[in-house]
Image (cartoon, rainbow, N blue to C red; front, side, top):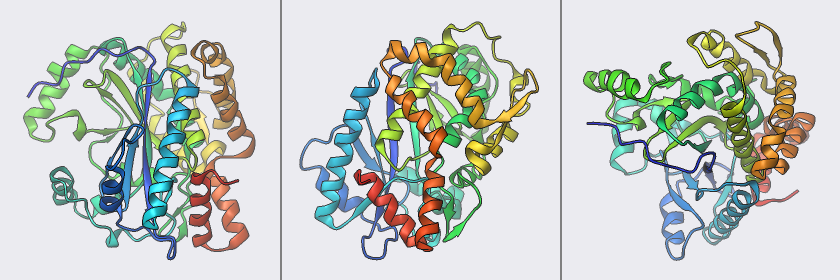
Length: 373
């Protein structure tokens, strides 16, 4: 079937999706409370959208379309407060973080929805192991070709968002030594990774997508788990590599950093993206997952390498003027604070060093989401 036409959207508008953990306050393990929580939330309007995800111990919230940092953050805070209040009524806690520190995938239950049941049949145990939690950011594009241009131009900066958002150092009760272990679960899926290098939407739709559809492997864009993918029904590109941060404040900052970066890429005089830009893609992505802000990033055009932290600092200088125009300079202040103090993976490791217990790590994530210092 044909792809949906690429919808019109306001250029550089943004929306955020957050996958959140549902936690039992006594055991601090994940709990299959999604149905009960969603039923309770149906009783009054939710500030945005909320729906089930792959397993019963997770939900996903989505914001409306926003143009600036203040309005996005205000809605995320309202959504958080609504969720926390509903969870307290059910004796359920909520948390961000890319993974739960000690849950066991075999104990998770797949949500009783046709698509999730089909994915479970197709992917087997990988579906339950997909009880991981990410932030997705949508950026509005004026055209389909503009979306493809941004998608491929952003590949150079993908490690920034992995390292800044990393919040999944613990999995199955162990320190994985990765700042973002969540992405290892995503990489296991056969249609993950990078999008094919195509800059013309007609060629993408009539060439690549038609060929993939003919194989029977895919039927829609939902079947691609790419790090960045176009969303024609929204008129956006969707960045999918971020762990869910521990706080909504950080989630808003990451979205606005992406917004400012897209504004810069659309107006700068840098060379157009090319296939050669992907020569070091997997290396850079691994470095960001494994070492976070201390990882190395290689510029495929200059062959120069430097710490990801330094690369972000240099990029912040480039996008500062765009952030001012878009009303998101406070977001860049938050990004600088992360660079100085460390990402949430570092915070969780510091918490473990204090309590020497992964349950204490989960407790800290719960408090962070509630807005406790």
